[in-house]
Amino acid sequence: MTYFELEPADKLPSNILPGLVNPKCLNIIGSGVVIHVPSFFNELENVQKKGLDTTNRIFISDRAHLVFDLHQLVDGLEEVELGAKEIGTTRKGIGPTYSTKASRSGVRVYELFHWEEFEKKLRLLATGYKRRFGDLLKYNVEEELARYKVSHLLAVGVKYRNKQGGKCLCEEQKKRAVIFLLRHLGI
Image 1 (tube, rainbow, N blue to C red):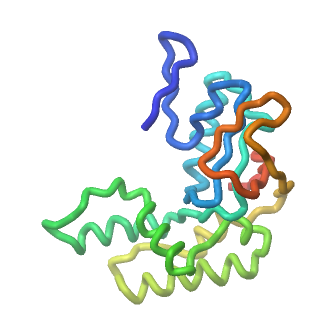
Image 2: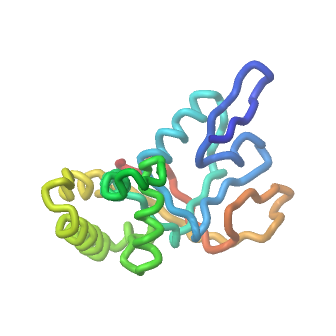
């Protein structure tokens, strides 16, 4: 976890949004990144409560892969499988998500805009993991789908260079980005 100081006595923990502390920086979550959307919104809410204005300063690539609660559960089950040789993951689903990304079975942000494909891919992931772990996997795909059902989502594709309009560009990767009008997401 990274900590950024707003004032000398006030520290802001940030796992996802480090660039937002500087009001001249944009924060871009790039295409090579995996993101757990509920955690993203929790962190965004926390930084807003601290007084940081995030309006038009947070961008998510439509090519970023989504971390689902399913991935987090699988992360824990894979640790159990390893037994004494466990690697000590954070169980946040990062490893399983990158595995699905590498095997080309993962779900990207842009698929939220193509609900049928999104639903199909998440169901396939769940079915595959259910075959592997059986009753050990306590997961309800319908609940996860309900969380991601978006009724009011607006996305605008944007491209950036290193500097645009005098603002420093903080990003993990320079690729296509999608601005999420976060207050419209029903997650």
